[in-house]
Amino acid sequence: MEIWQAIVLGLVQGFTEFLPVSSSGHLTLVQNLMGLDLGGIDLLFDIILHVGTLIAVCAVFWRDIIDLFKKPFKTLLYLIVATIPAGIVGVLLMDWSDEVINGSQYIGILLAVFFTLTAILLLVTEIYAKRRNKEKELPLCWRTTISMGCAQAVAALFPGLSRSGTTICAGVLAGGRSDELSKFSFLMSIPVILGSFAVSLLKGAMDGELASSFTAMGPNAGWCIAIGFIVAAVSGLFAIKVMLGAIRKANYKWFSLYLVLLAVACIVLYCTNVI
Picture 1 (spheres, one colour):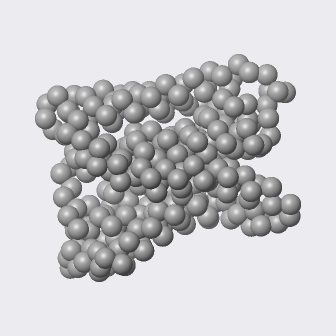
Picture 2 (cartoon, helix red, strand yellow):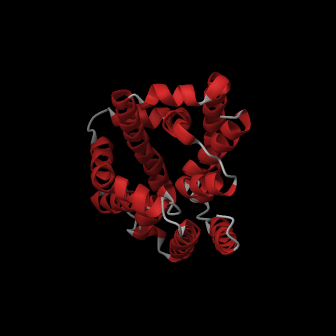
């Protein structure tokens, strides 16, 4: 692996993990577009990038994380329930998603479709959030929690559907307050990232893929790991700050416009056999 590859993937993962533009979709697009042949190194580097983004969200929301473990533990219970759908989907359908969606020869078209769906969802949510009666907004409750949990599970299957975007939009459309839902959405990312990290680590350790991944990274392995981790963490911090500002203003239209343009680009790249 080259250092420039580590920087590119770290930036893409960090910036897009918390913005409503789909990190999985961007990583899939970048790898196809730039011809990043990661070979056997993808497992180890995926773990490193996830740890970087995990550090970012914990650094911003450490007080909220501590508060989860204080009585009456209501938010912690909400978080556990919201994570269950994604856990079930991860166990039952992630292999299917990797083979059928990510491995599809029509990946360019599929990315365009899911980027467009995310753009529409964000735009509809912005219109709804600005027109509704603020006095009728709900605090975090079972209705918003379950809606966000189901949205997160669906987003996990399809590259191009944003996890943060779909969860926040689902909560807002269920009647929740944007500011409160944004924090909860970011907290929801923690068990998902931890789960992905644990599964990848366990799987890699059991079949020996973890050690082979490090070897496959070549002589720059140490530098690539360190740089990828730092870049993902720092860019993740920046992305969280940007997203919190957008949520406070219920301003998602620029993300929608970006995703529509990206969808058009995906179609063009597919039609010209670039991806």
